[in-house]
Length: 456
Ligand code: ATP
Image 1: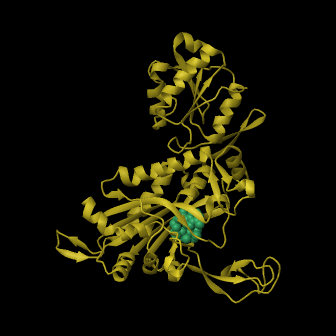
Image 2: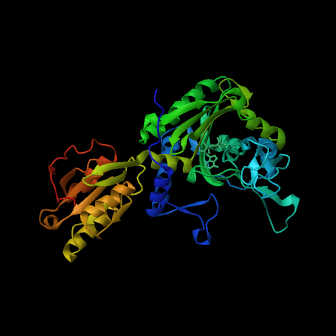
Image 3: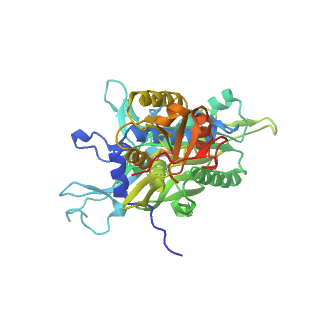
């Protein structure tokens, strides 16, 4: 078997993301803040689409899931119960000369990998960000920025059972920011200290957990494939016993072939009853479930599929990146699935002449009620198509002088560059069908193949 090679270099991707407004270094005018990133006008659309697709698949389209949005700051005892205070720490050594800190397990020799200086003994360093609540900086007011969204779900388990009238098996989904003071960051948005997670806690009857674990592994893999990620760039990596986190009895990572190699995109764990049991013990409040059918009280087991929004964004970008020979040049395009593409349609009037521009603006105003649409009337039509290709816009609608007479416009498709001409009155329904995945470039009724102009 040949070793798979990543689809694109990181450098190329970072440069495109920056140039086209997907991702900027944070606080750039001050020299940037290490491993913090800002999502630009296209990046924010991409991220929203990812989150929306996830919410649709795991909450809206299911009747055994509900959502939650809990706060980032939680009672400090939550982290004592979850084990994060005690265990979420890395063993670190510090260089006595340059004061750089290294993860002990990453240092190969006896001295500092950077300056060869002498290293201190290793000591524990907790990756939770600590801050103070209220005006007094004293130990009593210490709180932490959550390192995962999951605990907000566990502490609300009983609230949800009491209010949402859900019976087992059912799940709770939440997405939001998490923070980890990671020792080693890098690989662009892959590992940062502030990131967004999309987490599910799926509560089941003990004994059915193995089956549900397998179910969620399949389900989550399928989600990426349904949204266009190529199967050959995904793989599952079950954890060995020695690698399992303290709360998990089973864990599998969904890995993606990122530009720097295979790495975790999402982790799916069987957390057993660890969390609910711990919170029961430390809070003194019962988090048991009562099964009316069997009249049993028990603590449910939980399966946790935990994904990263930023890592997903990186995977969708990397997978979509394509370079194609185009005459003497190279055409760069992002072959995003329409649900993921930041812009769905661009409206391009062939000329800036007032009557045509006004007509095109009306078309734009109408389409924009449905989708994120851009209007672009600068430079040649060929250049405008290329610009949309490079940011992954699935369709361009071109309005020309003949449109003024026959009320028809041209739809050009990103991947095939095919064009069809349709009545303006059918523009929305045609685009809607195509964005919904209808076989591309089957002619709609009344449609005809059309070449609006030569692409230069
Ligand atoms: P890694 O081993 O890569 O640090 P992890 O196993 O600690 O990841 P989990 O605790 O399983 O990660 O978190 C679930 C998901 O949250 C990960 O699969 C990833 O998508 C995302 N995630 C975790 N840490 C980060 C981070 N520092 N930056 C961006 N995303 C992250």
